[in-house]
Length: 153
Image (cartoon, rainbow, N blue to C red; front, side, top):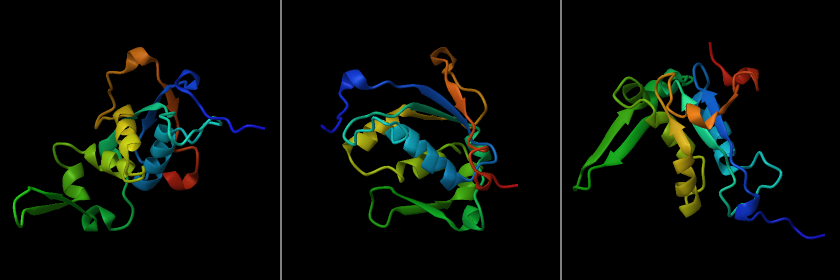
């Protein structure tokens, strides 16, 4: 038997919509990362972009368990000496770009290489319930019904 290796002609990409309202952030990010990478497919090949295009809506209504909403810090650097800046998840979710929390969580669950930076282009995150990708006819994936621990009351 020979090991199957996918070629670009073998890849079939779908569009998927995931509603993040009431879903725990880490569980959402792991499901999205798996879909983006293509590990849910039987023809998964590690060095190819096999995954689906994922649209995440209601990213501002994602749940963060425990005290992580106030205690988890996100750091960035201005490029100047001593220019490290920090904000917590509560400030980001209540700010101008709440979708960045989901984007960062998914990005950090992917390997840190060129392929994962290309794969991140297949992720579209929106703070509200509307998205402009209706022409692609995306199918919905219900993350809440996959496991009872995926949601928080």
